[in-house]
Length: 430
Image 1 (cartoon, rainbow, N blue to C red):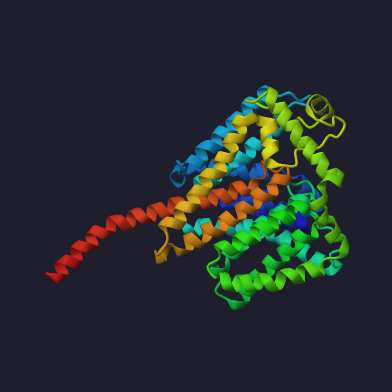
Image 2: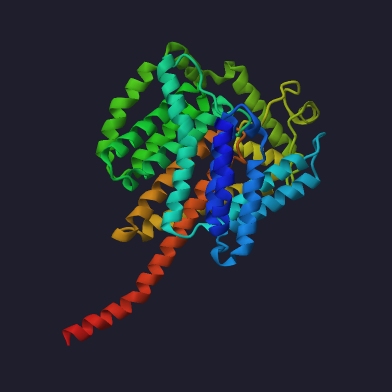
């Protein structure tokens, strides 16, 4: 039944994409982030829904070029440069496995990120993208939160199989990211019960993140909540809420959870933590010999670790977005990767500064503040996970940059209208 529902939704939506290509961006994010077909057990699990949606969207864009606008921003150009550089490092790959399978996957993610950026223009479209991400990840957060409460926190929360967020660490970080995104939707819901449902959903996502037993997510959660308080427009209310609920959540979790989280303070005695450090040192040593291109994709194997790791037999994945990019794409790749986030962050700061004290742009200021909180959660938690190519942060950045472009447009229109208003007022006085 689930397979049939997902199939009907996808194929039933294709005609609407030709009518309005933006619907293709929404459907793409839903299918690639939520992966609803993985919740079935039949034919839908192997259907190439993503390829069908992507192909239909691109055809629709070619058929209706007036609805496509290339966002000429630094974020987009650096994203393109980063993708191109990954192709270069793939040519000089050091791994025994061919890198092009992973390169194709990354190109699809970056390419469709560009497609989404070219199709979102209005506030309504920005909010639709936001809702799509919130629903896609919030579904697993609510489900995982209820599971954590029901099990008393004794069982771990895992993500959907065969996806970026399959592991407990990965799904936890995704849920840390989605909490501030959920809170953005509060002003978009008028019904008081709807607002309460949003608060409950955010709380369940926090419980699910804790129920993953992920230590990196615990650090990211703490950083995100702290920054959320700093960015809040009602610090007293949110602060009181956190002071009351945080201890209750910690008290709810069992002793085995606290024991695992406490290993952060004694990482030298934890094999998993030391394995990550070994992988980070491998990336540093490899890049010392290949500073420009790094080792390319597929460097986490016995051959590479035998050459560059302090403990050759302890082969681990990068377990850090920063060391992952450094080891795979060198210092050039790392500089481009960090520049993406720096440029987007500056876009957000620009919106906050220029939208201040303008009532019609208050929505943009609030949205961008929470988007920054979401990205900060990812940047902190990503320090311990190999999620450099996880698509959700790129969609969050697209929403932020689209908001910046819309604010710019609004301010220009206000500036153009101001002289006419002053002339009218002058004539009225005369």
